[in-house]
Image (cartoon, rainbow, N blue to C red; front, top):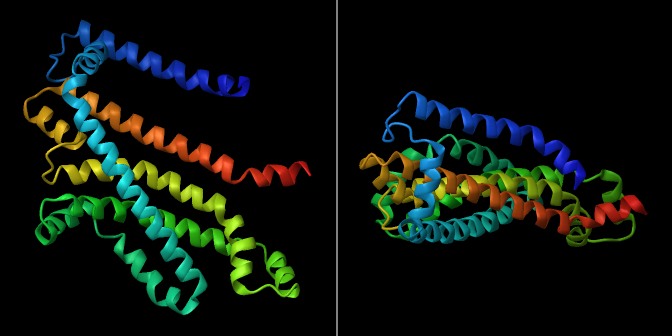
Length: 254
């Protein structure tokens, strides 16, 4: 705890100084609120406007969690398949790399044309954003398993399935969680981008309506919640990683 406080006071101090400079500059220079509202005005809008943006926030959370769950499952399944079947990996992996060169913002209108304005194209966007980091990180984790452990398991008569479950999968967990943490932050932005396509509710919709009516304070409120959601998902997965990889600490103490 003390270590966290010692490391955290510097960035916290810088953040406070930046907010103070922002507040004073907005007041002294007379910047219009529609152009750049002061932090206090943003906080006031965030508190007073809760009833207006709460449904949008909860809609984005549901969409993000659904898309992230599906994207994670697809990424893990694809990575496992490509790892266990090398010939499939040689044929498919280059195509996965090429698929990431297609900008999501360009692909999104096509998804709307193909699948309409329902929830399906939005989920596809989030899945595409989440799936690749998880798949690549998982495959890298499988490859980083120490050869002597695999050799020992083979000498003990273990099958390929047992080697995967008892050696390769546990030692790939840190890499898997690295991919999950990256995808968790991407998933929120993917949800917001998908909501720009024509949703009825969501932070993306709230932000679009606010910017079109020059309510810059509401735009900053939306940005704040996007950042907080991304940070919250990141921290949750970090805690889950500590629980899932606690065996490494036990081995180190042993």
